[in-house]
Image 1 (cartoon, rainbow, N blue to C red):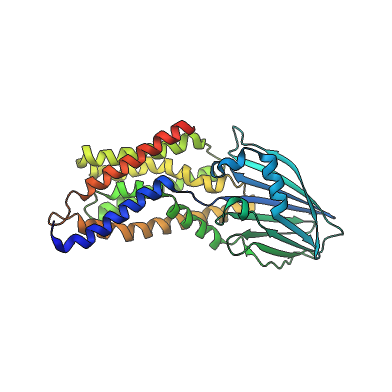
Image 2 (image 1 turned 90 degrees about the horizontal axis):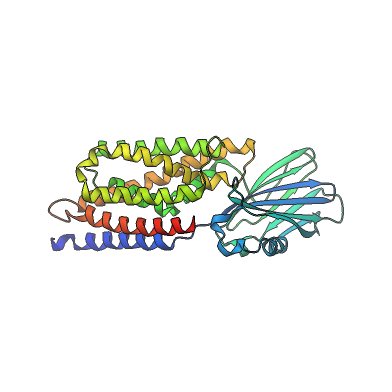
Length: 348
């Protein structure tokens, strides 16, 4: 190894270590979906949360519902409404999310509804809540996220004013970018896929095959046409990482058909991507916008990762520099994937 390449070597080693540590310790933000129904002086707040990302919070759903009633405050025309936990539903065979319902009684008929979402105190600063607010004669969607936890809705007609983010296409694009960049398992899979890539055309084929495949299953799963439990999908994702990394070590000549492997396992990863949207129970009006925006965000995040990682990887892997770097990367990825596989099988 030449001394001139030492800084690049250190940088690459640091990046690999960061990915490995993040892969083993990653805790992503959760996203909940709320339906807020207004009827006279009553407000029904029904919240669906992905059980997988909540950890110990799911052990006592009644306590979680009571805490949610304290942290989500609702006002009618400036007067506080009193909230009481009404019901909770744990995950079931056909539903991977938990459901919490809080009923609010307001002192008078509601003309301006103000919601302050403090659920981040319970679920973490990165938690999002997508809320569909419905009242006789109108509806509005808002998004409660970091730095924007307050929304005020005028219900005198269909027009509405809110101080929160509306459920726009751009939000779902951002959610998709956040999901892929925070989804270290998907990034490690991409890294293993591209570790032996030797040409631009080969890279384009791999990335295109992966994109088309996961877009298909993402769409089918979010639209409810395909359902595979996360207890099956998550171990398969880990297994795909191990498979590709080991193949890099024992059968490097197979890199020419890597686009086919990317397509096959891309179908599995698409089911994993779908979890971020499918568990929210989005309304039919929102679903298509959410699906397209989320998928665009995933592709943008994926493209950014490839553009940032691939050029220095190809440069450093040249014979005069670090020719064994792809193999070193593959060993690290295989170990991380194997740890994941065991953890997910035990948790299934």
